Image (cartoon, rainbow, N blue to C red; front, side, top):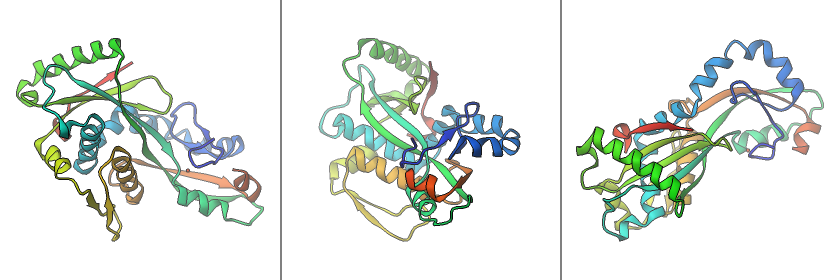
Length: 256
């Protein structure tokens, strides 16, 4: 079952393309097979994370989530070890597209061109796991040896990014900046204008609101400047639908 309640099938090869039925998948295979490998590369977890680290607005939200999850605005810097968190991604269909498809009253299959989008579904501290902490501490020391000035005097959170229920992850170092600490300490929340929208939202600081703003920003990027949307073609009918949504300097490492 898809994130928005739509019963969808996923291509077993690229793990990107979604289909409303096995029949739809078979019908589209002749077209899909020409881009299956390129989609798998384009939407590999490592490439998705690289897009996040190279997009300042998204990455500041990840950094802010780190500050809020660990309460770093209320404590002195943690310099003797890394803090560890994880962030889960899913590839899903925006709710508005599902509603549009489900609203169709036609009993004949209707091709619906839409996009699946990358969304962050969880962000939480990893505590009490000695094995994970030991591995991440070794990785943190490796990062520090590579670029000591970058890690000097700052708290570093190592974030394990993963996709769905896949155990593989990409680990990224997130040095906590004085800028984000200052913003959170000032309090009062922030105003956000999503990409492509004229609407300004008042959002209080919290981990869920950081993820909500981040996800909304991706969904509103209809021109796909962020590269976090994948075009897909869903064939649907009434019966089917009614039964059925720090930036460039960071260090990245893929971990099994």
